[in-house]
Length: 233
Image 1 (tube, helix red, strand yellow):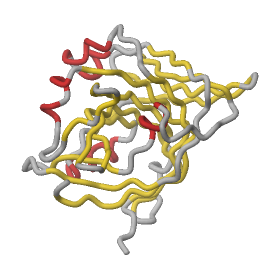
Image 2 (cartoon, rainbow, N blue to C red; image 1 turned 135 degrees about the vertical axis):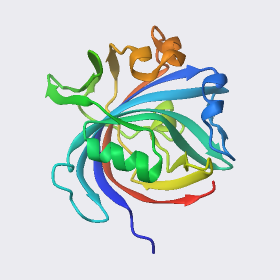
Image 3 (tube, rainbow, N blue to C red; image 1 turned 180 degrees about the vertical axis):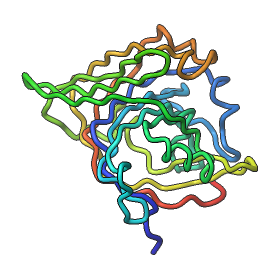
Protein backbone atom coordinates (compact mmCIF):
# COMPACT_ATOMS: atom_id res chain seq x y z
CA UNK A 1 0.00 0.00 0.00
CA UNK A 2 1.32 3.46 -0.86
CA UNK A 3 2.43 5.46 2.17
CA UNK A 4 1.29 9.08 2.57
CA UNK A 5 3.75 11.70 1.39
CA UNK A 6 2.62 14.16 4.05
CA UNK A 7 0.76 13.87 7.33
CA UNK A 8 -0.40 16.68 9.60
CA UNK A 9 -3.27 18.01 11.61
CA UNK A 10 -5.28 20.81 9.99
CA UNK A 11 -7.07 22.98 12.54
CA UNK A 12 -9.49 25.93 12.60
CA UNK A 13 -10.12 26.13 8.87
CA UNK A 14 -11.82 29.42 7.96
CA UNK A 15 -13.53 29.11 4.56
CA UNK A 16 -15.05 32.23 3.02
CA UNK A 17 -16.67 31.37 -0.32
CA UNK A 18 -17.95 33.31 -3.33
CA UNK A 19 -19.54 32.69 -6.70
CA UNK A 20 -17.49 33.88 -9.70
CA UNK A 21 -17.76 34.04 -13.45
CA UNK A 22 -16.55 30.96 -15.34
CA UNK A 23 -14.12 33.10 -17.35
CA UNK A 24 -12.05 33.68 -14.22
CA UNK A 25 -11.44 29.95 -13.72
CA UNK A 26 -11.61 28.06 -17.01
CA UNK A 27 -8.10 29.19 -18.13
CA UNK A 28 -6.77 27.66 -14.90
CA UNK A 29 -8.33 24.21 -15.35
CA UNK A 30 -6.06 21.20 -15.69
CA UNK A 31 -6.66 19.08 -18.82
CA UNK A 32 -9.58 16.68 -18.41
CA UNK A 33 -11.29 18.66 -15.64
CA UNK A 34 -14.48 20.68 -15.56
CA UNK A 35 -15.75 23.22 -13.05
CA UNK A 36 -17.75 21.80 -10.16
CA UNK A 37 -20.80 23.96 -9.54
CA UNK A 38 -23.02 24.80 -6.62
CA UNK A 39 -26.55 25.50 -7.83
CA UNK A 40 -25.16 25.99 -11.33
CA UNK A 41 -22.47 28.50 -10.35
CA UNK A 42 -18.67 28.24 -10.16
CA UNK A 43 -17.19 29.02 -6.74
CA UNK A 44 -13.95 29.96 -5.05
CA UNK A 45 -12.99 29.86 -1.38
CA UNK A 46 -10.47 31.87 0.58
CA UNK A 47 -9.18 29.36 3.14
CA UNK A 48 -6.99 30.10 6.18
CA UNK A 49 -5.93 27.38 8.61
CA UNK A 50 -3.23 25.92 10.82
CA UNK A 51 -0.82 23.13 9.95
CA UNK A 52 0.15 21.21 13.12
CA UNK A 53 2.52 18.27 13.67
CA UNK A 54 3.55 18.28 10.00
CA UNK A 55 5.66 15.38 8.78
CA UNK A 56 7.06 14.70 5.32
CA UNK A 57 7.45 10.96 4.75
CA UNK A 58 7.15 10.50 8.51
CA UNK A 59 9.85 13.04 9.40
CA UNK A 60 9.33 16.29 11.28
CA UNK A 61 11.44 19.03 9.71
CA UNK A 62 12.66 21.42 12.43
CA UNK A 63 11.07 24.85 12.13
CA UNK A 64 8.45 23.56 9.68
CA UNK A 65 6.12 21.56 11.93
CA UNK A 66 3.50 24.15 12.96
CA UNK A 67 2.55 27.08 10.71
CA UNK A 68 -0.47 28.78 9.10
CA UNK A 69 -1.47 28.69 5.44
CA UNK A 70 -3.81 30.87 3.39
CA UNK A 71 -4.99 29.68 0.00
CA UNK A 72 -7.45 30.62 -2.70
CA UNK A 73 -9.01 27.53 -4.26
CA UNK A 74 -11.71 26.66 -6.74
CA UNK A 75 -13.85 23.59 -7.24
CA UNK A 76 -13.45 21.06 -10.03
CA UNK A 77 -14.45 17.54 -10.94
CA UNK A 78 -13.31 14.62 -13.03
CA UNK A 79 -16.35 12.41 -13.52
CA UNK A 80 -17.59 11.53 -10.03
CA UNK A 81 -14.40 12.73 -8.34
CA UNK A 82 -14.87 16.16 -6.79
CA UNK A 83 -11.79 18.14 -5.91
CA UNK A 84 -10.01 21.46 -5.80
CA UNK A 85 -7.35 23.39 -7.67
CA UNK A 86 -5.41 26.32 -6.26
CA UNK A 87 -4.99 29.85 -7.53
CA UNK A 88 -2.37 30.63 -4.89
CA UNK A 89 -1.12 29.10 -1.66
CA UNK A 90 0.64 31.30 0.89
CA UNK A 91 2.82 30.15 3.80
CA UNK A 92 5.33 31.96 6.04
CA UNK A 93 8.04 29.33 5.41
CA UNK A 94 10.30 30.01 2.43
CA UNK A 95 11.61 26.44 2.25
CA UNK A 96 8.07 25.06 1.92
CA UNK A 97 7.04 27.44 -0.83
CA UNK A 98 10.30 26.96 -2.74
CA UNK A 99 10.10 23.16 -2.72
CA UNK A 100 6.39 23.21 -3.58
CA UNK A 101 7.04 25.44 -6.62
CA UNK A 102 10.20 23.78 -7.91
CA UNK A 103 9.39 20.13 -7.25
CA UNK A 104 5.58 20.01 -7.46
CA UNK A 105 4.77 23.10 -9.57
CA UNK A 106 2.30 24.25 -6.91
CA UNK A 107 1.46 28.00 -6.86
CA UNK A 108 3.06 28.80 -3.50
CA UNK A 109 4.50 32.11 -2.34
CA UNK A 110 6.05 33.19 0.97
CA UNK A 111 4.51 35.93 3.11
CA UNK A 112 4.28 36.60 6.83
CA UNK A 113 1.06 35.33 8.44
CA UNK A 114 0.06 35.98 12.04
CA UNK A 115 -2.42 33.42 13.40
CA UNK A 116 -4.44 33.72 16.59
CA UNK A 117 -7.12 31.31 17.87
CA UNK A 118 -9.23 32.65 20.76
CA UNK A 119 -12.17 31.27 22.71
CA UNK A 120 -14.36 33.21 25.13
CA UNK A 121 -18.01 33.72 25.97
CA UNK A 122 -19.05 30.50 24.28
CA UNK A 123 -17.55 31.52 20.91
CA UNK A 124 -14.34 30.74 19.07
CA UNK A 125 -12.48 33.05 16.70
CA UNK A 126 -9.83 32.07 14.17
CA UNK A 127 -7.89 35.14 13.03
CA UNK A 128 -5.21 35.13 10.32
CA UNK A 129 -3.44 38.35 9.30
CA UNK A 130 -1.53 38.23 6.02
CA UNK A 131 1.27 40.76 5.48
CA UNK A 132 1.59 41.80 1.83
CA UNK A 133 2.33 45.52 1.49
CA UNK A 134 0.07 46.06 4.47
CA UNK A 135 -2.01 43.87 6.78
CA UNK A 136 -4.88 41.81 5.36
CA UNK A 137 -7.01 40.41 8.23
CA UNK A 138 -8.99 37.23 7.57
CA UNK A 139 -11.10 35.80 10.34
CA UNK A 140 -14.19 33.83 11.29
CA UNK A 141 -16.06 33.93 14.61
CA UNK A 142 -18.51 31.15 15.55
CA UNK A 143 -20.13 29.25 18.39
CA UNK A 144 -17.55 27.16 20.23
CA UNK A 145 -19.51 23.89 20.37
CA UNK A 146 -18.94 22.06 17.09
CA UNK A 147 -21.51 20.03 15.13
CA UNK A 148 -21.35 17.61 12.21
CA UNK A 149 -23.32 19.13 9.32
CA UNK A 150 -25.56 17.10 7.04
CA UNK A 151 -23.97 15.79 3.85
CA UNK A 152 -26.52 17.80 1.83
CA UNK A 153 -25.54 21.06 3.51
CA UNK A 154 -23.61 23.92 1.92
CA UNK A 155 -21.00 23.57 4.67
CA UNK A 156 -20.35 19.98 3.60
CA UNK A 157 -20.12 20.98 -0.07
CA UNK A 158 -17.34 23.45 0.59
CA UNK A 159 -15.30 21.58 3.20
CA UNK A 160 -15.21 17.96 2.01
CA UNK A 161 -12.92 17.22 -0.95
CA UNK A 162 -10.87 14.06 -1.28
CA UNK A 163 -9.03 15.00 -4.46
CA UNK A 164 -6.58 17.74 -5.36
CA UNK A 165 -5.52 18.54 -8.90
CA UNK A 166 -2.66 20.43 -10.49
CA UNK A 167 -0.53 20.60 -13.60
CA UNK A 168 3.11 19.73 -14.17
CA UNK A 169 5.58 21.96 -16.02
CA UNK A 170 4.54 20.36 -19.32
CA UNK A 171 0.91 21.32 -18.71
CA UNK A 172 -0.22 17.75 -17.93
CA UNK A 173 -2.78 17.10 -15.21
CA UNK A 174 -1.74 15.72 -11.84
CA UNK A 175 -3.92 14.17 -9.15
CA UNK A 176 -3.31 13.67 -5.44
CA UNK A 177 -5.51 12.39 -2.63
CA UNK A 178 -6.23 13.93 0.77
CA UNK A 179 -7.77 11.63 3.38
CA UNK A 180 -9.44 12.74 6.60
CA UNK A 181 -12.64 12.05 8.54
CA UNK A 182 -15.65 14.29 7.98
CA UNK A 183 -15.01 17.60 9.68
CA UNK A 184 -17.21 19.07 12.36
CA UNK A 185 -17.93 22.79 12.08
CA UNK A 186 -18.49 25.60 14.54
CA UNK A 187 -22.01 26.94 13.81
CA UNK A 188 -23.26 30.51 13.42
CA UNK A 189 -20.08 31.52 11.63
CA UNK A 190 -19.44 35.16 10.68
CA UNK A 191 -16.50 36.49 8.72
CA UNK A 192 -14.44 39.62 9.17
CA UNK A 193 -12.31 40.27 6.11
CA UNK A 194 -10.26 43.29 5.08
CA UNK A 195 -8.35 41.94 2.08
CA UNK A 196 -7.04 43.93 -0.86
CA UNK A 197 -7.83 41.35 -3.53
CA UNK A 198 -5.86 43.06 -6.30
CA UNK A 199 -2.79 43.45 -4.09
CA UNK A 200 -2.76 39.81 -3.03
CA UNK A 201 -4.16 38.04 -6.11
CA UNK A 202 -4.02 40.49 -9.03
CA UNK A 203 -6.36 42.70 -11.02
CA UNK A 204 -8.52 39.78 -12.19
CA UNK A 205 -9.81 39.40 -8.64
CA UNK A 206 -11.05 42.97 -8.16
CA UNK A 207 -14.57 41.55 -8.65
CA UNK A 208 -14.44 40.15 -5.10
CA UNK A 209 -13.41 43.39 -3.39
CA UNK A 210 -16.93 44.29 -2.28
CA UNK A 211 -18.60 40.93 -2.89
CA UNK A 212 -20.72 39.23 -0.23
CA UNK A 213 -19.74 35.62 0.49
CA UNK A 214 -22.33 32.91 -0.12
CA UNK A 215 -20.92 30.73 2.66
CA UNK A 216 -18.79 31.19 5.78
CA UNK A 217 -17.52 28.05 7.51
CA UNK A 218 -15.20 27.48 10.46
CA UNK A 219 -14.24 23.80 10.40
CA UNK A 220 -12.71 22.07 13.39
CA UNK A 221 -10.24 20.03 11.32
CA UNK A 222 -8.49 16.73 11.99
CA UNK A 223 -5.47 14.63 11.17
CA UNK A 224 -4.93 14.41 7.40
CA UNK A 225 -2.90 12.24 5.02
CA UNK A 226 -1.77 13.42 1.58
CA UNK A 227 -0.93 10.69 -0.93
CA UNK A 228 1.55 11.24 -3.75
CA UNK A 229 0.68 12.83 -7.06
CA UNK A 230 0.09 10.77 -10.16
CA UNK A 231 -0.26 11.84 -13.79
CA UNK A 232 -3.74 12.20 -15.24
CA UNK A 233 -7.16 12.82 -13.73
